[in-house]
Every structure is written in C-alpha cells, then in structure tokens.
Length: 467
Image 1 (cartoon, helix red, strand yellow):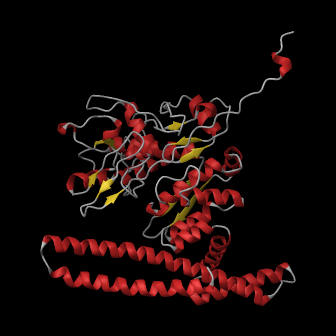
Image 2 (image 1 turned 135 degrees about the horizontal axis):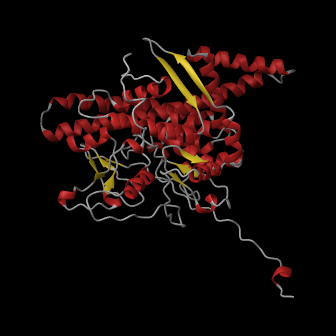
Image 3 (image 1 turned 90 degrees about the vertical axis):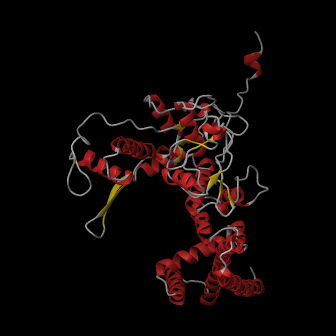
C-alpha cells in the first residue's frame, strides 16, 4: 500500500462510516412501526450494520498496520545503520516506545503490533490484502502471523494460500473470514501440523520436554490450575472427567456439568469428596471404577503400519504424532475405531442403519464428521453432544448419517425452542443453520486430505533376472 492508497483507504473509511450512520439512523427512526414487515426490515438493517462495522474495523486495522510498518521503516532510515548490537536494540526500543505513546498502549502491545505489521507487510501479502478488503478480521490476521512463525517463506505462503487463495491446490472449504477466530486458529494449526517441513515426531519430542503444571491465584478465593501435557494424555483426562461428570448428573443433582468436572478432578487428586463449596461428597473418588475415556483416533493405514510418518487425528484436538497413535492402538484403547476412508480425499465413508436408535459406530462417525457442535462458531467438544434427527423420525426422517447432527445441549434447545432450524447434512458435511431472520449460516466443514501412499519400491534388474 503506497501513500496514495493509504489516503484513499482513509477517505473511503470516512465515507463508509458516514453512510453507515445514515442507515442506522433511518432504521432507528422507522423502528416505531409495529407492522411485521417493517420491523423485520429494521432488524435486518441493524444486522447488516453490524456486519458492515466488522468489515470497516478490518479495513481500519489494515490502515493501522500500514502506518505502523511505515513509521518503523522511516524511523530506521532516520537513525541510520547501528554501530553495535546495543545501538540496534536501543533503536528498536525507541521505536516501540514512540508507538506506545502515540497509541496510549503498553510497550508490550506496541512491540507486538510492530512485529505483526512487519510480518503482514513483508511476508503475508494475501493476508494483508484480505484484511484491507474486510474479508478477514484483525484477529484472523494475527492468527495467521502466529501460525506462520518459524515456517520458511514457502511454508508460510502455502498456509496463506490454502485459506485465502481459492485457486490454490486443495483450498480450504469455505472463506476463512466466516470462521470465528478460535475455529480458524484450530484449522490453521491443523493444516500447519500436517504440512510442517519438520517431522511432528521431532517437534513433539522437543515440546514434551516442556510439560508442566501451572498454578495462578485469582480473586474471590479462587485460583487456576493448568497442565501442559502430551495431547493424548490431556484428551484422555478431559474425556474421562467428562464421562465421570455425566454419570453424576440426574434429577436430584443441582450442579452443572462444568462444576461436576471441577469437583471430579478435586476428588481424584485430593482423594476427598466434594461439591465445590468446601464440602466433599462420598462416592466420587472412592466408589466404583470411573468411566473409561472415549478418545477417538483416525490413523491412516500406512502410518499405522509405520510405512509413512503422516500424522493421525485425535478427536477434539487435531494432528498427533503417528507413534502416539500407534501406542494408543497397541495399548488396546477401547475407544479406537477404525474408519474406512475414501482414498481420493480422505473422507470417512457412510455407515448405514434403518432403526431409530444409533449404533455405537454411528455415534463415533458423527464425532469424526463434525468434531464438535455443528452450530456456527460453537466449539463444544463432540463428547458432550447428543445425536439429533434433522428431520424428525416421527415425520419420516431416517437414522442415516445424512439426517443426523450432534448439537450441544445449548444449541439443541435453541433448535427446538426458537425459530432457528438446521439445514440438510451429508455423509461428509455437518448441517448448516437458518436463523429466525432467514439468514443462512454454514457450519464449519472439515478439510479432509487424501492419505499419503509410500513411494513404490524399485527392484534392481539383477534381483529380477533369473539365474
């Protein structure tokens, strides 16, 4: 972006804000009408205004990035070449301090902005262009910067192209800007893990050495306890805790699932019995055996056999090292479910059933297809969700995979108590949703990839020629 483009962008933003203010004012003035159609138009106008504000914020962020990168380059030119490493550090500190004062933010925030601005303006042109056009948010742009750290230029460009270039080989399904930032980070990280030039085995070995438990006091007599663990262990703990918490639910249990999870962990670790208020309940820690974890892993056949080193997929997490998956299978994890995949695109195949009740295989397949609640933006883990017929069984709906969703309890209630309705699903795609205002929202689609096949083994002429 040159100076003329920056001025044009700023002027366009000013015009857009002025036009938006007029639209919102007109919508507010007409809101006194109590006729159904005018009210619907007013409500739609406010939603359109919110969407437009989001695009304007993205364009403003792009202009801010350009200004920050431009000031950094100008300040470096004014300072001239540094005569020593100390001088270079001092110049960087001066730039950060100046930006921090101009924006009235901390120097840490200013330093982060300058680093992100440098990456976007020099190494991530597709991301910067999408931000300028309002196609992605500032949060999406920051995630792209974060997920391309330590990738070589080719790797960063490939990750960028996958999500932002429709003409790329095997592009992502659906615009990146339509994913909430948390889900975009998950998909970007998954793609990065699959295509990272350094083996996931090597990176996992280095990261596993950093495993730890952290404790952070909080207000109101509370504290945070977190653990940085290998993914299979963390997922197993989470799923087992959820299963134990669900087993305690009932008509006489007033605690939420979230509270039950916390109380279960306290009971397991401290050996007491508790309800989260200082009084421990019996039976939680010392009763019968706790439920087994239900960790699903999808392992490419050649990776399972050790022929290739492509990653496996751990339900609710993403790519894991193949050695971790092989170890889980070798240990006889009863949750392991082999799934046939289409060799053309890596998508699992349909599992059929004609009765109302779902089989265990169907429930596992729904978890593999959706990975989470299919409502747009919801990240609720699939283990917490219940299968739901899109077209009710009583109205002729089947129990096939294409007529099933697995919304979380919150969005299951939303579907049955409001005008929100799911759209049709397929064997490979979760259902979308139609809002009460008639807007269509797509669910997040999984980005299946075809399995890797090992290179054919060549046989020398001497070994094939008979003596």
